[in-house]
Length: 128
Image (cartoon, rainbow, N blue to C red):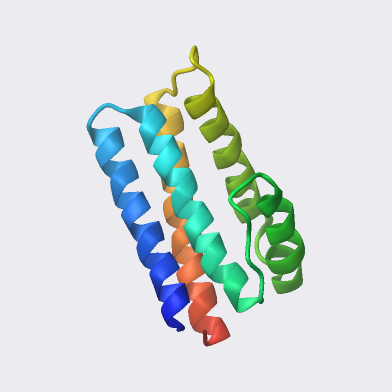
């Protein structure tokens, strides 16, 4: 695995840990935020294998689908995880009146954990 991919996966793992700590500390909004960035970091590692750099904006999701999900036959649930985490993060971070529930945060964290594990396996198979 390339050093760049390893670095992105380390970032994903740190974000997962921060999400776990946020959830256990009673901060579900922050858990959702960090879980989203765990997915983004893992997806970035996968994109680099495909020769892609994803911008840190909403446009990266469509590019990921086109350049990674579809050509590699990834389970559609992973694209759903990306989109759902993005929507919840937008709400958690940018809506002053929104508060994530513990169950929403836990679900997002579980999906992020699943996504990061899939990304690690994907990178092993690609020989990056």
